[in-house]
Length: 127
Image (cartoon, rainbow, N blue to C red):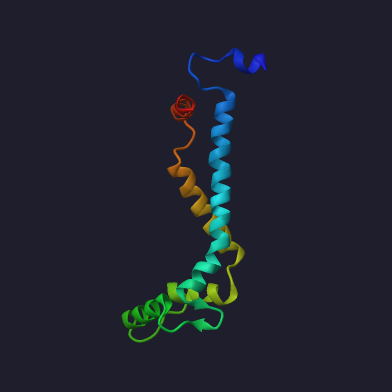
């Protein structure tokens, strides 16, 4: 242990505080990303993208109406509404799950401030 602290400067930042900072950011990103993946089917269903099709009077029905109007009366195959309906009916594929988890987890880690030296020193001073 003395070898780890031998090169320590006068600041409050140490190897352990840096490791804790990284663990909070990475672990938090994984947890938040995983929660987003788990919540995606519930959110799709609540928006009206169900296994039985688009629910009447829902947000999905309004989105479909807007998409159809914008495209001259039909919904574009492979468009946003079609992709969301597919995900609502058949579930999310592994690629979509990885994309959602990575994006949401990355955004969480970005907004928690990262782990540059000054950030860990500020956290140490607050506690």
